Length: 265
Image (cartoon, rainbow, N blue to C red):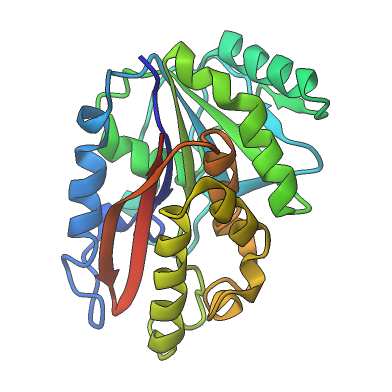
């Protein structure tokens, strides 16, 4: 049964294992936790594997994690000690990693693999909520470091057939990612961009692709994404289901800023 492609907000660092002071508050990420907790059950079938496109991994060419048992990569800083004791022992899937590279090669896209890289927090934070028993194999995919929207749409197109093989494509980033202003002003820009992003995700396919390629012209775009690495995973998800409808599956405010997640297909 064909799996959708998802673009999700993975939260702020190890947010689900922390109590935040104001302006966030202790339950700031509760609605996002509930959404992720129900993600697997919302799918048409339990996925055979999850391919996570990580906003926290950039490489010269798209690079796939090919290890059999990836470790933990704690790529956040300054958080309480217990957040560095989290464990997510999901198996890797070298065969799926090889399949990803074969599909990219078939589309004329150069790629690489990394058998040593562990799960960064764009991977283990949402997956610890979505599949806490770590039973579903997880393979990670980097962004291409040029962060070109069209290149990442093409990556998604190349990988679209994985959805018919029981693989959930999970693009993990954040619809809002301005760490300097996250707890300060700029609410108007964040609302404008989130509104544009939801309208774009749900637009007709030919309209959606064009708008995403030109995302920098959207209202509030650079105020919400001074650097676009947390937005670019969306392009992979859209490319993987480019001719299919998009749906907003999560929309809420966290610390006053709106965040959204989308499903395609």
